[in-house]
Image (cartoon, rainbow over all chains, first blue to last red):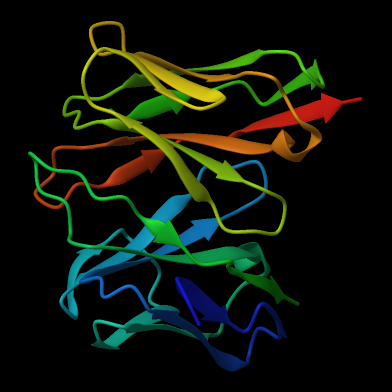
Length: 117
Length: 111
């Protein structure tokens, strides 16, 4: 496997279910991100991890719970979701968490298309 | 506040040129990215501008004017495979460099 992979690619769940999204990066990067992409809306940053520590939680409801056990893996645990949470969830990674005088290209995974019934 | 705008959709003919404009407003700016996203696929990096001017990369060029809060992506010699959504995003000067995305411009290339 190369780049950033995500599983599953598609997920349908009921509002009372608990499921997890998985992301793995094979690039040796130190930073990982979760984004939500809804139809016709901008990508919304949800969480940022740098060296397995969460550095940003962008006012995301507690029904989304991230986990970063190591710098290569990132999970998004889902429970009691709402229909409006249906979206494409994208994972990304970058070499570092960019500072004010540098940039870091983010590499995206293919996403998980989530449908909440 | 943090705002970024780009057109929703543009249509052009194969072989033609299309220019996608992006305007932004932010109190802290640390560069502008363009990504390409085909339907059902991951966004892929196209370009990065942090200084004013034009960056050319093959058929694609990107321009930035920081004083005007304006960028454009120029696609030349359009091919059918260029039909995709093009995402404009700026990086902030937060301690860890947050990317703020526009909603994307859907480019449709017709024969």
